[in-house]
Image (cartoon, rainbow, N blue to C red; front, side):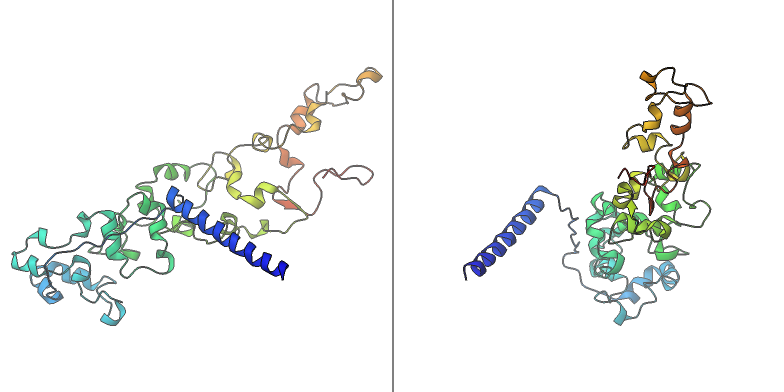
Length: 325
């Protein structure tokens, strides 16, 4: 009974500690969320979409080609008011002979107000993480990327195609996409949306590595001899947006490897024949001269360590069967 009681108390203590950690994270802002606020037109009532189109007949044809205009009432999930689903009740706008202050204009509303309007319907799937996304926290509005009244709406009512729309803000990434080593975005074989969810984070709910391994499956393993940075995060060694180094590496060899690995023991050897027994342990014959070993072993690590993502063979096999592992 004493052991069972102790277990119960321990469980309660763990629960309390987790609750305290959660509350502390909320208090310090570690858990960030964009707070949405629904805009209102005080005193207005709904008049129906036909009334709207009596004046805005130019919108009728465009709206008929829009996905929102093709939805039936039972598909709207709480936004069955046509134009007024987004623009709010329009009675005061009509009575005021088109007074624009008496109607909601999403293009001129604050980002959190526009988000609240859109979130009446768009709250599931890849859109459910919007309030926690970097775009939302940077006060980006839905209307910055989407246009509801475009004459020829693109996919998802975007104002531009991906990646041009993304590059309008992320110009540094546009530059990287033109580096010698890059993902085939400008070739049209990929887009930003293949890896990024603009309404959330990456297009994975798991590790960054799992997103990379969707395409680069040959590096998945498991391997007997794994490479710690590879198992942790691919972006430690690779810049997915582009690099001047080969294979999207953040730096060329051997400098990338030397950030973690000290100088290879071969690099410390001299390139001349030993003249006497005292220096025989530090010198060795090398036909390429004094700097021969530095040139041989300090130019490109993958000449010998070719399988840097992991291998079933040890990295440095020694004579006699021993392994430096």
